[in-house]
Image 1 (cartoon, rainbow, N blue to C red):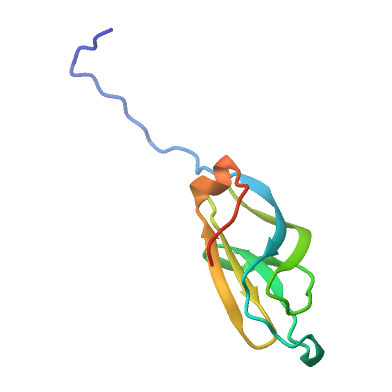
Image 2: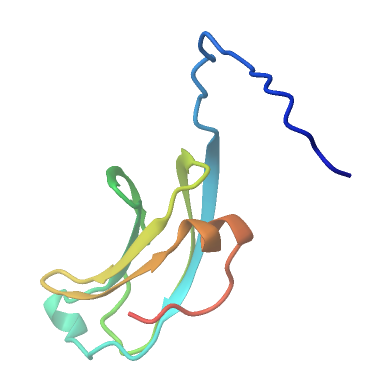
Length: 118
């Protein structure tokens, strides 16, 4: 098929504002490995937090677990965001942050199963 330039134009006086498409992100945080050992008796527990990139008020976190090198949460989190959002993850304890990782908007859109490097 070919197109020809007829010198025609299409004019708009304005389009309705497009609302961002809301969606629910359901994230299953399985666990983490290779964390520094802590002292469970000292209250040095670990949790994973997730927030929508650039929107720190939209966040959730797993339950806390003992300060082991390899931890298992197997915890489902839900956040309400918009199509095109990325997700930021952080592994934290009472005192320290042990690492961060981000799922890009493309990774979120395609679905992601696997490990993220901290």
